[in-house]
Length: 126
Image 1 (tube, rainbow, N blue to C red):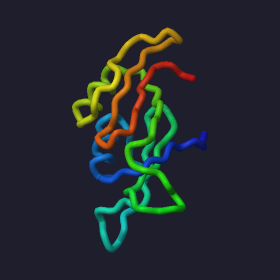
Image 2 (image 1 turned 90 degrees about the vertical axis):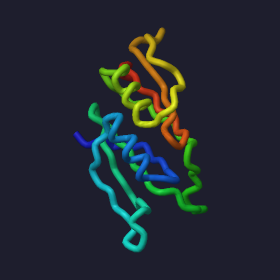
Image 3 (image 1 turned 180 degrees about the horizontal axis):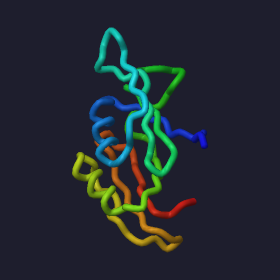
Image 4 (image 1 turned 120 degrees about the vertical axis):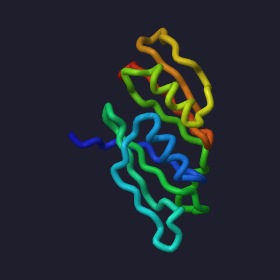
């Protein structure tokens, strides 16, 4: 089955973001860099172990893509909410909400990545 829904984010420091995302469990599928400036990530694709994915790149001023770093939010399903939360903090994330059982079912936690994007990790499968 092919995943047809991908979250997209921009980062001021895409390399730090890639390190953080790998630490919380994403795997790289593609990372394309600018040939003149390899510190610029033109396009990256990462996969979440339970399905779904994320595309990201280095933030550049662009009226055609007016997305500022640090203003995104994502929900990622995981069976190990506590372990993913601890990995996220250990890799430089900031605690927003510690792991807790949720009234709607499942367990959830929230962390801001190093640039402020909100990551919600939960065992609830919508």
